Amino acid sequence: MDLAGKHLVLGLTGGIACYKSAELTRMLTQAGATVQVAMTEAATQFITPVTMQALSGHPVYTSQWDARIDNNMPHIDLSRRADAIVIAPASTDFIAKLANGLCDDLLSTLVVARDCPLLVVPAMNRQMWQNPATQRNVAQLRADGITVLGPDAGPQACGEIGDGRMLEPAAVYEAIVAFFQPKKLAGQRVLITAGPTFEPIDPVRGITNRSSGKMGFALARAAAQAGARVHLIAGPVSLATPWGVSREDVQTAQQMYDAVMATIADTDIFIAVAAVADWRATQVSDHKLKKAAGQPAPPLDFVENPDILASVAALPSPPYCVGFAAESGELGVNGEAKRRRKNVPLLIGNLGPKTFGKDDNEVVLFDTIGSTPLPRADKQSLARTLVDEIAQRVPGSLFA
Ligand code: C5P
Image (cartoon, rainbow, N blue to C red; front, side):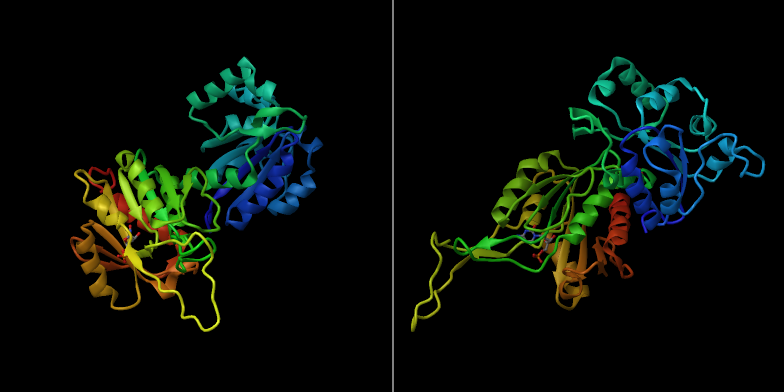
């Protein structure tokens, strides 16, 4: 549960994007957050407090004169247990009020009276967004330490196209989760390979493996949440790109090698999670290999693929390198031997058949000091633990 134990105040202001906040509320509560909704009068024109109460599981507040709070001070009480206030959607008008400290309704008053961080998710027409007054106000919010998420670009409810759309609920959700993560990899440029590779034999067949890419994608998400700039080079997988991560898709080991080498000079930490095929067919047939009655199976010759991790580790000034090893047994012996052979400071060993395609994993860390087993955990939690472990070991890290 990404947000277990977190208390959020979700403020809605007037805008058609209020419908996105219904979905956002569901995502936040399902992730374990307590969500207290407060709405401006204008927001209630777009979505009802009944809907928001049903989704959040708590009474919705719209007025500073609401007598349901014991001391009759909802503008103070509602935010006091909050870990953050999120305004989504934030209208042009509400942003202008925030920038100037105005408070003439419940939501604006409780924001001015807050003692917790504030995240603002703008939603408006593109001309309203580009208006110099809006840009000035948004710059003021940032200068005041307020986090501004988005806006997105694209088609708008008014029929125009441009900047100003509210981020999709999933993106706001990811940004909120990331907001709460310690920034242990701030300023680090992280390159990750993930998934299997696919080595063609002919135009329709090839050799691949059972890696799903889940561990590599979870690490990319966790590293981005920890403040790193993450580039992900992925083999053929069917996974969504984690929020805030740049992604490049490749098929073969050679393409993965080329993509890694093209960006390695701008990398501080290289994490090789991909299950790269060790061999490729020497000759790729340009037509489908046909079977014929009475004929033997076609002979296949293989040539070794470049070892991406070992090649990076052998560079004159390599980034901090982390390898993975999917073994089928004797992890203790094979893991350390592989770490030495690849010449990397940290190798994460797991048992392939017990992890490929699964949502959880059990790993052992091998480094220059020795080996450390970690308890079985879901891949998202494990990825956070691994990011902590990596952050502690990166030379010059503040978290060492
Ligand atoms: O030798 P083995 O494939 O078991 O090594 C696993 C580690 O090496 C993983 O980190 C994997 O991503 C990396 N690797 C690589 N290029 C290869 C083979 C493996 O980067 N050709």
